[in-house]
Amino acid sequence: MREAKEETTALSPESNTSRKSLEEIIGLGRYALLAFCSMMLVILSTVSVIVYMVYAGASANVVGCGDINFPADQKEACRMLAELRASNVSCTPRVQSQFQSVNIEFGYFCTDALTVKSSTTCQMLAILFGAFVFGQVSDFYGRKRTMLIALWGIAVSSYFVARSTSFLEFFLYRLVVGFFAGGTSGVHAVYIVEHCQRDHRMIISNVVTWSPNFALAPVIAYFAKDWRTLSYYSTYINVAAICALFFCCESPRFLIQKGRFEEARRVLLRICRINGSGSEDSKEDVEKMLMAEEKKMADNKTKKKQYHYLDLFKNAELRKYTLIIGFGLSITSLQSYGLMFNQESLSGSIFVNGVFFGVFRWAINIIVGVLDVKCSGCTRKRVAAVMKTTNFICLTVIASIFALGLDQQYATVIRIASIVVLVGVGPVFCTKFLTASELYPTGVRNVGTSFQSMSSRLGTIFGTTVFLLNVIHMALPYTILASLLLLDIFLFQRIIPETKGVELRDHFPVKKQREQNA
Image (cartoon, rainbow, N blue to C red; front, side, top):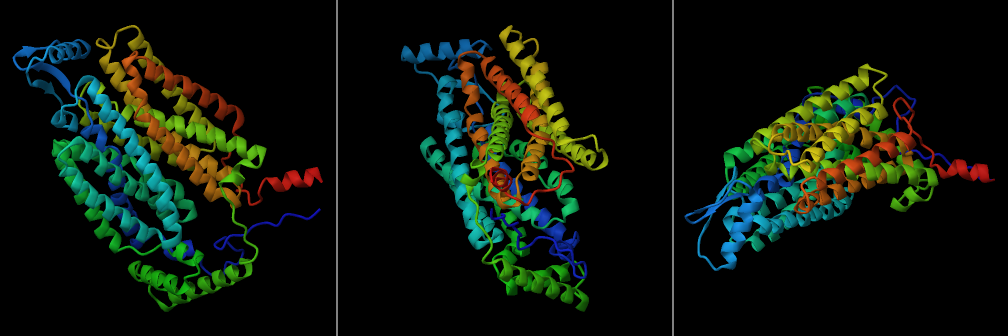
């Protein structure tokens, strides 16, 4: 039997400690601060695109038509409006809304509002398509250039969104915005990781993340007051992100992996100067590291095998882990974005609810990150079990309230439970992505993580439509979410192994099976 060879990556750590690694040269100094602050602006750009329809597509309550007043019950109000329209009564609907949405400007009320909700699903599909395209582009042309192209695309198309004269025009421009937002949604995460030292990746990933921007987005929407101004603000945010990104360098890790060593040398020396360590010793460290990486690349050039998505499904064990974690991430996204896009149905201000959700989610993420380092008993599966069980209880409570017809009396309970679910999904996202990275062997770790990202996007797409089922019964969307979450809890806790403290695998799983079969 021929032994399978162990893979080595171009940037794998060496036992030789006489030279600094790439991570040590980049460090956690002034340049890292510049890069991470720039990425926060890029993330804000992406978040502003994704949550835009929470406000721009918010349904309005119909309170009357002309001089005719309607009851507070929206089902009855919509029935009366439909009767007036069927009788050809000429009157202008009067509405109440916390935000001047496209629904109000273009007259999409009651059942017509479903058209706006459905358009959001298509916009999420555009983001998914953009993530596929720009993910490949970033591997060819670099992280910085790809993000600049995507940011310019969002800025320009957001401007045209604000100038739309019809809902169809608005929808088409929003598809373009979503496509370019797909480019920033995935690339910025890679850029952050490629600038982190190994020991700091967990805490930085929990600080430089979406959660604080989820808290900032409602504040921006509050001051915008209408969908056109909010779209203009999106343009300004992207221009600011572009300006910040111009001061950043291309990822040195990307340049080295592509064999562009001269560019990598210039970038690393600039980083050293920004960090205040542009001495001869720093230059020598850069040269030693680049020479070693160039030698490794030359040695491994003929040995390196390219793995693809299909390799995730060729081994039974890997296939099982991939599908279960992917299913779980889809369900987590379904909860997160389903509730997020249905905020107008909750009591209280959609802006205050959004701020609470973002702040609390960020705080929980940081707490979980610290506990992961300080407490050995805070394992991946325990964190997932606690957060998902809490969310299951909250969803079940909400479904029960609607099923019993007590939603008016317990509106505050529904609001609090919904925010708890939105907060709880944050640590679940982090835990599942980290578990996937720790389960996948080196050869398929990148494609495996990419597959899980796409699984998460599927939940985002269907999250915009799951609450359309409330036309059948208000409890139905929450019942579906709770049922799927219960299945996710069972599968993850029963089948996925604990990965905290486990050494990362380098061998592809089929090696062991082949040896046993031999």
